[in-house]
Length: 303
Length: 250
Image (tube, rainbow over all chains, first blue to last red; front, side):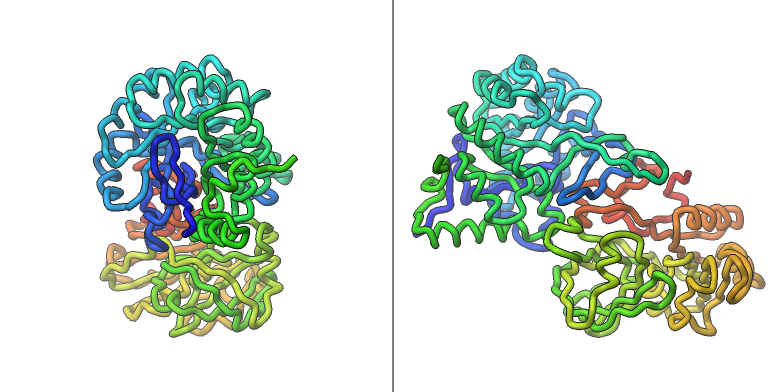
């Protein structure tokens, strides 16, 4: 029997495909298309201490094989999420992971603290990598010391697994990954979007209201695969790979270079069934290659 | 809402740069309500990358129509579609028009904005008038326009010379109470702002169908927001139809 399940930072996932934060709303937005419980996990939209309005529109623009976004972490805030959104996730038969974000170290800690004790939340993914906010986000994830401090502080107040989501907008992602591992992170996920910009040449204005944004989609996949490859060899905690995964073949690249799980993000927009198709495609690949488990594939790159 | 592979039944040019795409549909035609939209995937797998939102212009038993203007890469590719081609369509999506009891329902389309009010015109049985404004005669999809439409062009080359604002003024002449009129408008942002301003001055309730660049279409990405008095609202989820007094214009 083919086994797609994995053990990730103490969690047993039925398959290694999760929905990426920011692309799957609060977990119910795609319920009209399929049961979200079919996924290995759902990482909900980044949550902050207080509700966030987000950036002025336009917030998205299509670019070759990808898109720029400058949403700016618009979210309902942790309290509203816990009261009004989490109850509707109770009967989804998969792991719900809360992505959290803070403008300061204290805010990260406060949000993490309020998630402690909620049974339906299996883990926290700490966003130290958003390129679209003036304070917090990527600023914490671009420096090993501050990345260490955030993760260490969150670990102190939250007892379930803590995943650090890393930014590619750094000179040396390995040093950040090592720092968060040392701080106690149970896993790392990468990559968040690459900072980018597009200009309307007719009116000479930026195409995004916030001037710049984050690039996602297949355009960034080679960068993501490379960074996952580098990080997977440098840390002992599991690596969750993401960046432009549109189909099973894309996901397989990440497993081969060492990712233990993957997240599907922008692809959800293009095809609401993308994540489900990817799960089925991985199963087919394993079967065709006489592999019994996804573990037989992880980190098997031949060089 | 569903995801369907729809067969192209016809795709014809109906005015300069304006096309009418007729698609077969399993559930979309019967599910679609006036003002709702669908998201089409055209081209190769990755280019154009995202789906594109379009109003459902008309819907019949197993068929629905999309009226669109060629403005960029995706619509250029759409214009090349031929019968029997297959297009992936997601929808219907969003909240359509709210139909309240009115003495007169006034549907207002500016240019390609006609696409957003076609289904409402089809399904609304109550007393209604349809005002359609275009820049010039070459922009008018004549095959879709009949005697029951109040047609205006800015240069006077077809119909009455003027804008939809002149058309609204003409259409409401003689109506007893302006409060008994409901306006449903679709068009460019500038046109919608002007129509909203006029309705506000006259005390007429007005709904506007907004458009936006969009990624997911289901409320997940928060990419398509417009400014309202209650903060940003998603065009795909809370919209695409808004009451004009909800929105912060300009």
